[in-house]
Every structure is written in C-alpha cells, then in structure tokens.
Image (cartoon, rainbow, N blue to C red; front, side, top):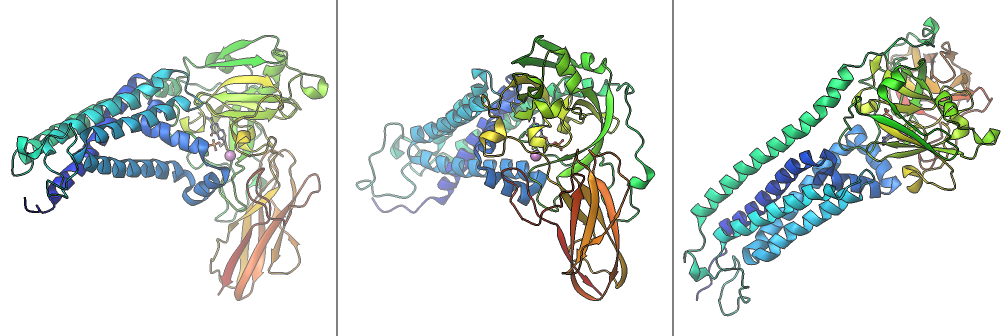
Length: 540
Ligand SMILES: Nc1nc2c(c(=O)[nH]1)N[C@H]1C(S)=C(S)[C@@H](COP(=O)(O)O)O[C@H]1N2
Ligand SMILES: [Mo]
C-alpha cells in the first residue's frame, strides 16, 4: 500500500472531539453541581485544591501579581490546561478510543478527589459532578471516535503500522476514503448544542440557588446600635487630593480570601454554633438572635498580612455588630489570663476556612465583634454576609473570619488553623505601618510646595507621630490629622518645599507604645511585612 498523506483534517477533528468531550464533561458537571453544591464543580474544586496546596510564597506572589484577579487568572489557567489536554486526548483517541475515553475518566477522578478533599466537603456526593461529567465526556469521545475511525493519520504502510487495537475498527470496515466527515460534523454539532444547553441549565440553577440568599440580605434591616460610634472628627481628614478616603467604601474595600465562588449564605437558615473547651452552654444562634442583641458600632481598620509595605490591602470601615467578649462570657468562656482552659478561638466558615485568634485578645476589652453591618449596609457577600468576625489590632488571617458559622474554644497546642498549617505565624498583631498616598511613584510635580500625604496605622495601639524624610535629610514631623480611634488609621500630610531634580520621599510612623516603624525590610511571610515606604519623584 502506498504511503497515504497525513490527514490533517482528521487530526483536527480528533482534537475537536477531545475539546467537545471536555466541554460536555464540564457542562454536565455544572448541571450536577447545581444539585449537589456549586463548590463541588470540577474547576472550582481543582482551583480550590490548588489554592490549598500552593506554597505560601507562590500564593503571595500571585496576590502581588494579579491582586484580586488572582482567582480569575487561576480559573482561566485551569481551563486552558484542560482544553489543551482534552485536545491531546482527542488525537490519542483517533488510534485508541478506549485510551482516550479512559483519559477523560481519569480527569473525572482527579476532579472528584479534589472536590471531596476540600476542607468544606462533608459528603461524598461532592464527587458526583466530576464523575458524572467525565462519564458523559468519555462516552462522547468514544462515540465521536466512531466517526473518525480509519487508519492512523500518520502512518501508513499497513505492514509497519502498529497492530490495530480491538476497539479501533479497521479502515476497510468504514469508508475506504478515510473517515465519516459528514457523520462527524453532524454528531459534533449535536453534541456542542446539547452541551451548551445542559451547561446553561446548570448555570441558571446555580444562580437561582444564590437568589434565596440575595433575598435574605435584601430583607435585613440593621437596627440602630445601642452603642453608636461617635462621628468621625472633622479633623480626621486631611484636605489633600490623592489621600485614601478616611472611610473606605464597601465597593473599594480590598478583598482577600481563598473562595473561588463567593459563598451566598441564606441569613434565614444560617446558624452560628458556639462550643468547645470551657463552654458551659453550647448553643446555635440565628441571625435574628444576633440582630436582637445590643449592637455596637465601631470604626475599625482591617489589614491583610499579605500587604507589602506601601500596598493596598488595608481598609477602614464603620462596622455594626455584637460584642464577641459578651457573647463568650454568656457561654461560660473565661480567658486564659483569668484561668480559663482555652487560649485559642477557632472560627470556621461555611466554605471550610479556619481562623485562630487568641482568646485573651478577644476578651481584653477591645471591640472584638461579630459584624453584621459594614458602612450602614448588611455585609456585602464578598465581605462575609451574613456575619464575620473582627478583632481590632490583628491581621485578618488571625481574626476576621468571613461567612463564619462555628466558633470553637480550644488551645494553640491542640489545633493549627488553615494559614498556620501553611507556614504563617500562629499569632500576628498588626505591625506599625505608614504609606505615602500622594505623590504617586514617578510623579513629576512642579517645584514649590508639594503636599505629601498618606495614612498610618497601628491598630489598637494608635499612631502618635508620622515623619517624612527627603532623600538622606533629617526626619521632619508631618501634620497628623485628628485620631478617630486607636483602632483606625490616621491620615497625615507634609508640605514639602520641593526643589527641581530627582528625590526620594520616605515615611515612618511611631505608635503609642513609642515604637518607631522599623527600617528592617521583611517579607510578608510569616507575620507581616516590615520596612518603610518610599516614593521616588522628579520635580520639574
Ligand atoms: N472565610 C474566610 N474568611 C477570611 C479569609 C478567607 O480566606 N476565608 N481571609 C482572611 C484574610 S487573609 C483577610 S485579610 C480578611 C480580608 O477581609 P476582606 O476580604 O473583607 O477585606 O478576611 C479574612 N477572613
Ligand atoms: Mo489577609
């Protein structure tokens, strides 16, 4: 037999059938996940498993590179890899349909393992979306393969061609000219249309699941707090354009969490369990129980441990919530400094996050709270609706559990929460920091008086002084705006008589313990970045 030319169209059709199989698998998985839970879908599960296993340094790098888009980048990456592998499997299936189909099933198993291995997975049913999807995908690949069957696309001297495996019909049983193009195109079109329909159905079911939660949020009326925050002092805001607004709006508030799908929790069915060592009265509280208590309203600045010096992961909001210390006391909790048995409070969220906080910090008189409201609104879903924890003075990863549903009293010896298992410090008070908001790096201000301004924070200690240095000159005191509370950041400004040329501006803060913000640069891991923020500008 003469050497037949490589049939490029057939290879392409193979790749297309692989892609279609992948698409059908994901679409049916989406539909099944609507019946199980949206988080059990393969892309979310594999993405979540990847996040759980990413070394802290890589995760930190991803946050720096992509910011809040890190999750989108991850999902696009997963889909791109899946598409590539699906295409390859499709080509493999040209010669070995069973191998191709088995490959698709293998992905289903990987997805199922990822889904059931997530910390929030409580049922084996989480394996169903991936498994069902892969069975559909494998079946489709096998079926489409029937339309493509002929000799190997590459080869072709029959004598030297590898033995045809049993599942591949020999060329002569099919169209002698090669493969069944018409049949393939029809089958592929039908498969694509069916998958699109199934996927769309799954998406709409998943969306309607969230609708009850959305309605429950819209129904929340925040009562006026028994203990309101005082008005932000007029002098707390410096009047310099470019400074961060004193209160960060909900939409501008940074978001850092591991959730690929923002949990949509229905406040009507939500419960908070309080239990553990030293809890004399274990309870489950409803959202209405919390709303019915005396509420406090406080301005609190929240900071992420992943914030680089000068970085954006800090925000200040007016929160309304329940005093956590009172709630714990009612449940019999005694802090270790007064002889209590539990030194760690572990908060768990609906999606399986665990966050550990020193019980002494929660109960030492500061305004640790279960927040229900943020800037006058129920918490946004992305910021923890219906309830999140906040402890002034501690980084978010050791204090600010969003979508909280469980509080367990335990010890630091007995339990390591999520981030601690991943090399971050057990305890992490916020480090004293300051940031230049204006001028921006590489700005070109005109010579004359240039207003340098920004924010400084040392939550729960308070900021007492901010100083600015130009190049290697002396430290000069900045004008400090009035303090709102020692749990909030403080704005500052500095009128700089700028002379032409390149200059470096550096800022440092001193907190109320008298400690000066260190110049020693450290990484964010394990307990927060230290060092001083500098901005280089060229004065014209
Ligand atoms: N459930 C849950 N809560 C969480 C996290 C998370 O990943 N999951 N991240 C924590 C971290 S690291 C920070 S800095 C704050 C950020 O809160 P924000 O997104 O509302 O700004 O939430 C904390 N609470
Ligand atoms: Mo964080």
